[in-house]
Length: 198
Image 1 (cartoon, rainbow, N blue to C red):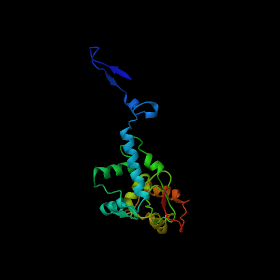
Image 2 (cartoon, helix red, strand yellow):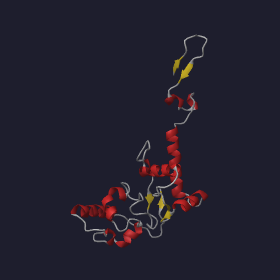
Image 3 (spheres, rainbow, N blue to C red):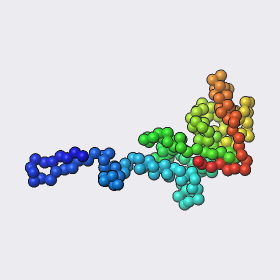
Image 4 (cartoon, rainbow, N blue to C red):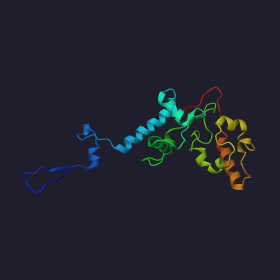
């Protein structure tokens, strides 16, 4: 603590506190003021999680009426909306957060039958979103909004229709397809199990 006072003895002194000290808990004898940025990020992450798992609530139905739904998921790629909605999308994308990779590192799509998981846009494989890892393939794909099971049914092995691209591919693009195929070799879908978030 640093104190700083006026010139005369009879004047009250102003007490200056370090912000880190102000944010210490009351149990430690300090003020217990929360760090606003971290607290706000935690609340936004909680809302993002609730959008994924609590679909029966009134708030979720209101949001789906406004922004729509894709494959049983709230259309979080919609960019229009309030400052709150834009903050929600930035939170999911890890933009302007104190820990930019938190969402993708801690939330994943657990694929069962693959019906309600988006192949390119859901974090269902280790290493992040396929749209980020294979941006060029996504750009050329004829199946940008396909579910995991749809891509599986099209055939995601060598020569499969899942790799139908909008143009003839270059050698380096074929190498990307091969890399993605190798990534998918061990994936097993479970017909009787629904997809979930974990």
